Length: 327
Image (tube, rainbow, N blue to C red; front, side, top):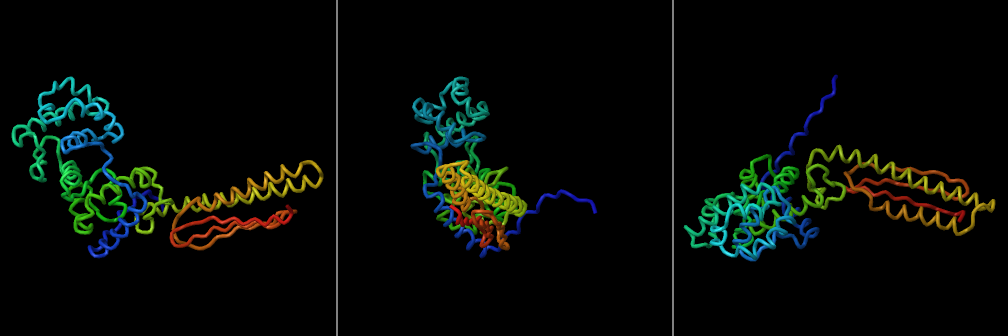
């Protein structure tokens, strides 16, 4: 039979009741990991947040904050933007990328704000999405952060992680938002999105998700974790072998010392390095449940070194115990 490379199917969506229970656990775990999670864009009023959010499309929040630091000093009202020279404004926001399209959206939106709402930012989804360059994502950012109106911001991180968690099978942001709303407590809609955004930047990355150090690994049904767990176990075995090699080094040095080739301080240093490697190994990797695997060896002149790879309750710990009776 010929082998085939198939893309893993998305995880099954949980029932609404199961989803609510699991989401509460996810929120609790992420809040412990990211207690200060919030919008990363700098702003002091709704207009500034509108401008910053439009600029943030396909751009890092760090870069946007660098640009707006100067921009917000020059443009303080919607009228200031509405009367801005488009060519000058484009140059001022050029480093955020797609600057022509963003300049057109911001200046047009501010002209509409002046004409329809007297320069004020409207406070409803229906009105906000009438503004050029403003979709549901941007509107939810503004409503949730400026007007205490809860909304789920579905950006690239939320889209990716919600899918990996099995909370949605959809790919369209608006449909993802509709899937998430019934299973996330309304009071947590805004917070949930920013928790996923922080988690996506730190651990659940697009290409290289760090599942082995994920605080919600046990609550996640991401199919590709099986392959990564297998790779992780191979890494664990290699590390355990390396620890045994450290023990062998101590054994050799001990035997050499007995022939007066090395002094005691050199042997002590080698032993310290080996023990440091053992201590660091305890925090190396996490993966899935499975059997306990053990490696042990007799090291001549020193004693027994034993490295145990224990896989239990979603965590792998490499434990290496050295009995250096010869030192």
